[in-house]
Image (cartoon, rainbow, N blue to C red; front, side):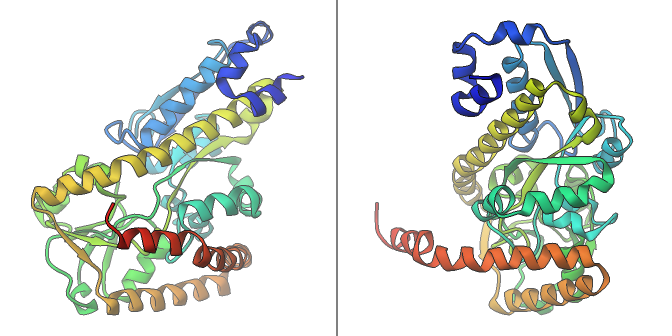
Length: 360
């Protein structure tokens, strides 16, 4: 059995137990750098990069090492695509929709309004043709992509004042994650701002921002948003499941020995699964703590949800008219999503609806 088959079938423990380390030691040492768009304090997202690096080092017997750098260490949070494209770093850990200023197609690699859930995104990317479509687009930027994990359905964000109807959005200054969502919210009267998460707390505290959306309870609690914006809304209809991605420089990947390429692929899968599982484990615990500390949990009014859907569909139509690639990927994703929603109606939705109605 060759080494790549071992990696696919046995996992890390199986590889080490099979005694393949001598073959690795014959390889030259490799040193890569990974630039993240996130601070180290976000151990869920940033932790995916650390998990990746640890796994690669273990698989290679220490011959392949990847140093992981937080936002601002090597380059700004929103500079990582340029860093990959020009070869400054070999890898990045980021949210693709941060780069819709370059092209709105980037959003499909992460999350779009009323888009896919975490499981649906994983299915579309890995078995539904999504990864192939996105890598076709990313090739223009010298990028090969791999999942770094998914946050799951996100919360709707923190607001300094209560949102009773869509009218309350007029003039609201809000930190938003990506261009498509920002454009939809702009149609509803929101003044959108895209800034690194590390700058948000002070902006809320000073009143420069009225609201912020980021991820969910576990990360949001660490960032302290509840101290300056007491209203916590749900659901985050703009991120039914937000995919974080490893961006890999295509030339750097192609230059690796086949065994090391297999290690990169396997380590990405390990890190992605770990991130998603950690979010699912930690979010409910953090949510209970936030509520106990006085956070005011609220669901979005129906008129807000309806208005958001209408505005989002207008934004999609506008971008389809401008970009054949945008239209191609959007229509492909929606076709996949319709089948997923059909299946969910008879599986997890029905099961979870019942389980939510009973006392455990």
